[in-house]
Length: 492
Image 1 (cartoon, rainbow, N blue to C red):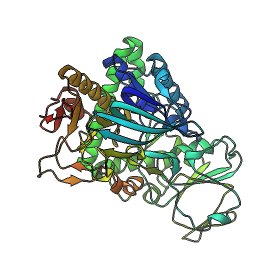
Image 2: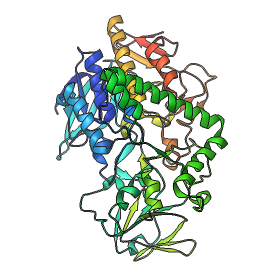
Image 3: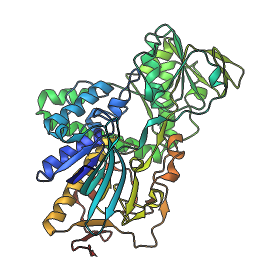
Image 4: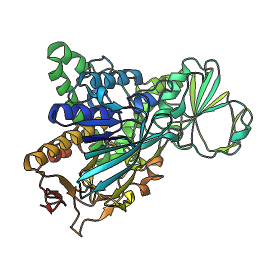
């Protein structure tokens, strides 16, 4: 069985994995590393999803990497543009030559005797077994299953004579021009699909069980455009990035302090787009407060424009059954459809769904305690990347990758072979991994690691706090331990 050794093994070649390779090159240029990617191409989410209108719901000045300015005019970018950006970052930094494609990681085993991870994988269509060893394991596999999306067991599904598609598995042969389309769901995917398909479909109906907050925002950032005209590119990018970070933090904080006022502002914006006669209370007024779930974004109000010009509509009801020609609702109404798109969400999985063992003992991921949102009590020499639920993913990804590089350099300078968070304070209580009410989170939350009741075990979902902690905070904080001898003797 082939075996290769690297200083660092990165699992996943999406936005986070490519960023991790770029950070390693810049900050730890003497370390060897490999990026193990299950699929045939890099890009992760931005290569997997191909549905109409696929785009970011975060601006590219914060979704972009801290080290690579976003230069396109559109701040809210489409999927192909984001994929090109990620691929360009990989080429510019030589990360593309470190990627092992079609390499599916299945198991990772830590040995204290050798202070290494043994990473088992299957390579290629024949699933040839291959083994890697590494000193540090960096998980960048995202948080959802690529192989399966969430799709409820709708009654009568087998009766429908048209086509049923899930956005996660969209193919180019799915025809919708001139057809009646029903999009089931009210999240970011549905809000993206509806205006994109409404351009050529006969009509698109978004069928939702309950509403979501939808906010219109310009697709272009005028301030960013003006700064680029007057300042060097990197400086203009940095200023715009901080502007958007601080604006996002302020709006999130204001939403938590004054939810009723923010709710009124959002719904007032909807009424401006759709008019006083539209039933905003029924179709756009959620049962929860703003930012209890992530807000949906309509660039340049495209979603509202499609509703206003009658090429799309929103129906708020529950499905009784699929029929041969569409969907029958609890109210008795029937919606005709040639195509039904089940934009019903993701299936989440923790830490790439790998099986972990430490010195032969199986690790129960659900019982792990998160340290600084990136490491885990009891797991040596391992970190994972997980972005913010209330801001751009890459903000936290960049901070995590830079911290890992800082940690690796500290360990080399001090001749440490092992680092591991250890929870010794009994007053720290375990809490759910994130405080987020979205259905796709709640369905999987019990399988994910926990967070603690206070720092450094608590996730604050706050970029400035994380910046201070991860970039400037002491590595030796009483919770992260280091060891050097073999077998390692951990010391504070």
